Structure formats: C-alpha cells, structure tokens
Amino acid sequence: MTAQPARPEHSGPEATSVMDVLPFKSSLVKAVFRDVTPMHVSRSAAWAAASVTRTVLTEIIDGARRAAAEQSRKKLLSGDLVSAIDRNVELEVGHKWYDHSPTFKGMTGVLYDAEGAIVPSRRRSKSRKPSAVVGAHRFEAGVKKLLWSQGATAVPEMIRDLDGIASVFLTDLAREAALVAREGGVKRFGTVTPVMSGEPAPPPFLQDSPRALPARRGDGRTIGRDDILAATTIQLFGGNLRQRALTEAREATQNTSAG
Image 1 (cartoon, rainbow, N blue to C red):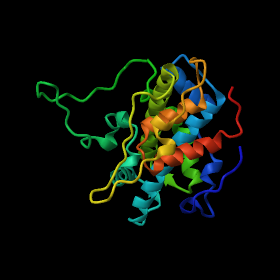
Image 2: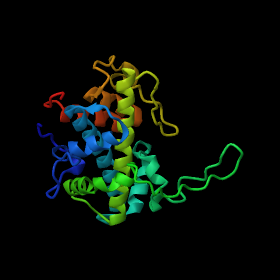
Image 3: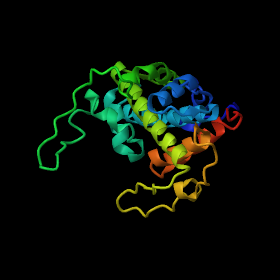
C-alpha cells in the first residue's frame, strides 16, 4: 500500500502519518463479518472496511483532542469524547454502544413505548452469542495503535468507549454491506446532509451519492470493496467525514486484489 501524507492537524514529531496506519487487521474485520453474515468477504472489502473504521475513529479522536486542548490537557477523558460528538453530528456513530456505556448514561433520553410507558434500559445480556458489544474488546489493540499514531493518550474508560464505538460501527457496516450485496446495489436509501441553523444547504455530493453509484456487479455471494463503499454512504452522513472515508478507502485498496 502506498503511504499517504497525514493531514496537517495530525502532524508532529511524535505522530505517525494516520494514512500509514491500518490498525484493524483484515482478520479482525472478517471475524466481525462472520458474526453477521455467511457471505465471503474479499480482501479489498476487508481493507476498505478497516479503512472506513479508521477514518471514523480518527475524526472522533481528533475532535476529542481539540476538546482536551481547550482545557490544557493532553490525556483524553471520556468527557472529551462526548464533547467531540456534541460539536460534530457526523461523529455520532455506533449508537448501540451509547446504551451500554456509563459515559453516555442519562444522555440518550428516555424511551417510551406506543402506550406512553417508559421503556426500561436494556440489561446486559448473558448470552454467549457474538455481538458488537460483547466483542468490543477485540478492538483495543487497534484503538491504542491509532491513538499512538496521533501522539495521543487516553484514560481506560475512553479507550473502552472507542473500542465499543468501533465494534458497533463496523458491525453495522458489515450488515449494510451484506444487504447491498444481496440486493444487487443501493436501492432503498436516500441521503441526509447535516446543516447548521442559519447556514445554506451545501450542494449534494453527486459523486458519492448512493443513487449515483453504478449498478452492482458480482455473484451476490461475495462482499466486495464497492459494497463497502455503498454501505459507507448509508452509515455516514453526507458531509466531509463520509467523503473522506470513501476517498481514503479507495486509496487503501488501490493496490489490493479482489480475492
């Protein structure tokens, strides 16, 4: 894979280029896919999924670093994670983890059923069935590698939250990619573009729009790179993060074979 230069905000004497780091190994990515689908996952698809997950986590960490810097801190706290998500709606991914993590307790609102009764919080399952929450620990080594590549350190609670968000996001990405592969392309999704109050709406990202993607080619039994790209357009808002995730995934897979 050809090394790519890091963005200026991540550069520094102690930081490695983020684009040089693919912290989530293809074996881990494929293990996550096996939890949700029996379909075969190509090598380029695994690399693309790892790249998209890296891009999302990189942006979350970068937002948390800015929040910590405002308080003259270098070590990241869980509160910095919350601040990063509050400031940028594009970073609000991995929602299933929010119900599980103490960091987000009381912040996700009260749920009501159709009769107006409060829905009690879900208790931790004792099932051994694989899930994104149960398998979150598998991402710890990759998260620590990504933090190190940006010259950042974090408290254990913050690392645990990043593990969980990465696991839930990649699991959701796997489900969407499998759906795209089975249905022969993106057919039932539109685009949503976040806009700040009082600001004009930006033009649509025609190049990366799900409706602008070409018809899927393949046997319907293998998840390929383009299925991951299509799933990314579903999972991420139509803003800068999605555009960057798609670009970096294409760059990360430009020298990989389809198998």
